[in-house]
Amino acid sequence: MTNDSLKTITAFWINFLSIRILGKNKLKKKKLEKSSYAISIILSLGYLFLPLAQSFNYLTYHANEKIKLIQFE
Image (cartoon, rainbow, N blue to C red; front, side):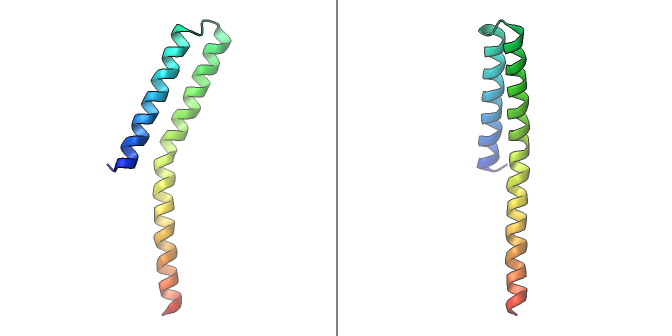
């Protein structure tokens, strides 16, 4: 695992757990609890797709570089 993916996973769990704790301790109303769960789901999806986006960016960058090399040959 790279350093960026470790940071991503750590940030995901910190955000997820902090929202869960806030949802249980401070936000006693059901509407606010539901919104905290919705926020945690949105953040978790974002953090799960971030490494995929980074790897896609890496792959497209190297594919474009190979295309440039082929064009100049």
